[in-house]
Length: 228
Ligand code: CA
Image 1 (cartoon, helix red, strand yellow):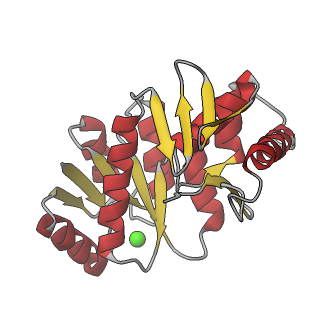
Image 2: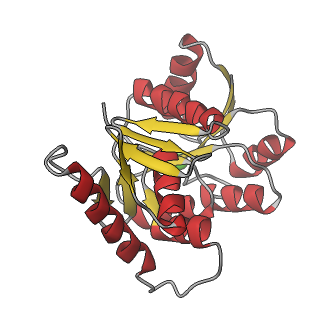
């Protein structure tokens, strides 16, 4: 697995690179947004780890440029604690995940592995998260064998959430992915649809789950819990 690390802070870059190398990744490092962009667009990386504050092009500009050119390499953003707005914009621009500094390299390695598993899982027809099982051939979602009756739109939303289990999706990402058209950003269709799905899950699964499997992440969006 080849990882491109674009991070200008030498201390962080060094511990990330040595930590990932120790875990068997093939790491290429770069400390500048301009050369990072050039390396990334040349391709050949399985994952890009991208810092937001960089000399030259900043991380969001690198990400936007890559997605505009159709470079599909998955991106994990490194963000500071106070960069919530940038984090959301990054997810909306097509980042796949983010990690807030400070972090342990174990966590970054785990996120990279989860991302790669998720991407390879996107070609599979059956998705299982805890007791929830989604079959895209029969278009059926079940929990402990009991069917949850969903409309096509609700099914598409549950599929998107389950395939991204453990990861926060913003309302904009959900709208673009599930509704697929330009929308009024103030619309509440996503929230309304989530509420309907939660009620349907509760009605067949009453008492089985203390909390809804679909978690609201305040100010960001929604996440399907990684259930055991
Ligand atoms: Ca930086």
